[in-house]
Length: 153
Image 1 (tube, rainbow, N blue to C red):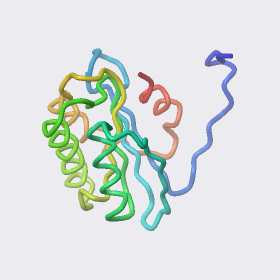
Image 2: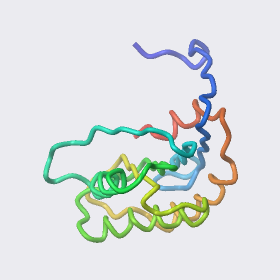
Image 3: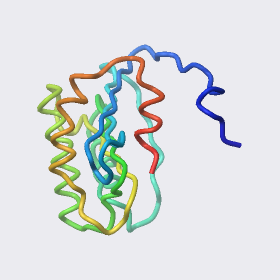
Image 4: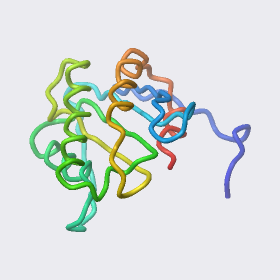
């Protein structure tokens, strides 16, 4: 049963997590569609991934990055799943991690990418990259409701 926005409980800040949501225009103009989450150093992180051999580029890269280091950032977009795009999809997912890492001052392997949305279309990477500085500059501990909207397909 869906709750109206007036019935939703208050969402409280979680120590060690900051987040921001922006309208990057990934699929629709003026829609919150890009979320960046910052995790405090030494945060313990676990993930469950699909067992499907044909998983999307962000899943492949997130698995690799999680195995290589402790994540500091999550970059999440909606509107495009970056799935079924082969090497180009991997390159786009990696570019999103590299760009966020450069802005945040961490290693690209400390960024986990996530995408949801249309399958079989190239990720509009230029729009994602344009939205990252605004997201990083807007990181705060109280953007949970916006982030929830920002990851809806």
